[in-house]
Image 1 (tube, rainbow, N blue to C red):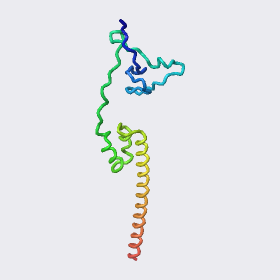
Image 2 (image 1 turned 45 degrees about the vertical axis):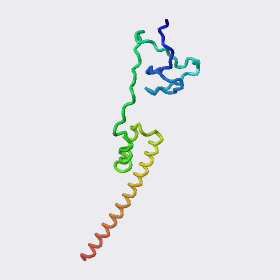
Image 3 (image 1 turned 60 degrees about the horizontal axis):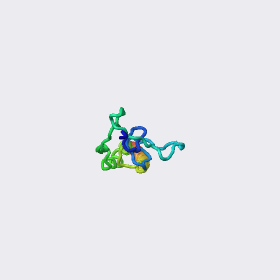
Length: 144
């Protein structure tokens, strides 16, 4: 009897078992693209040997780690828009709950709102400074 198990497609980097249609490894993210000179029939086909054949089996990865509170959209979005602004970008970009396009959109929107808020704050300070200057002139004129 043959010691080899039915050939399955495995990742060349982490040896995880893959589907026939995968282009990237689901476990380590390695690209499964192969050089053009490799035959299409044997692309990524590696026989899985039993553990007693002298080969260490690939580590079995369990389910994805549970989401942490700091990855929750219900925490990140209020922090991003109401409290911290750009200081919450780290939480946004580390979160697995948002796709890359949404991360880019939120980054652009929050950056734009921050620039607008800083500009408005500058205008308010200029108006306040002008009022303080007027008040000082009125007090100097009243003393004379």
